[in-house]
Length: 132
Image (tube, rainbow, N blue to C red; front, side):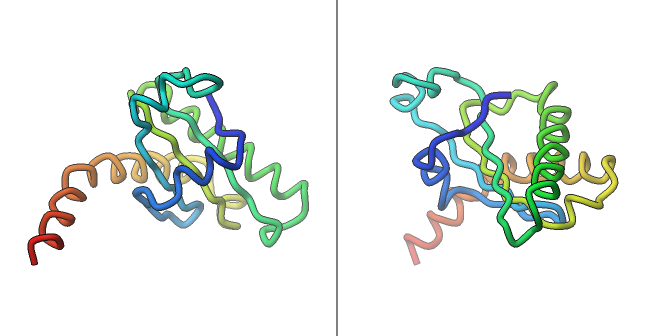
């Protein structure tokens, strides 16, 4: 699974579409054609993921366990899906540590579905704001 590594890649996702679950918050932003053709790791045309777990969550062992659980859940759910050229940033919550894995998979599936279904509705909201 391709990942975001540089701080600038994480910041580029800020302000994109968001979805919240008990275990994590996820932000998504589509990459433009110029970004996907550029050099470096942006050559990959598919989805890329970045995982953030703050020190407030716990010590290094706890944070790494949460990171591994979230990566496994996203890898399992995105294997069969075509997500396009999008970048995702997953911000972990403490509930990701104890949440049963099947519920975590359900959270991932619902969040990704909601992010991609908001695509059409999001444009409608912007049009209504601009004309009002």
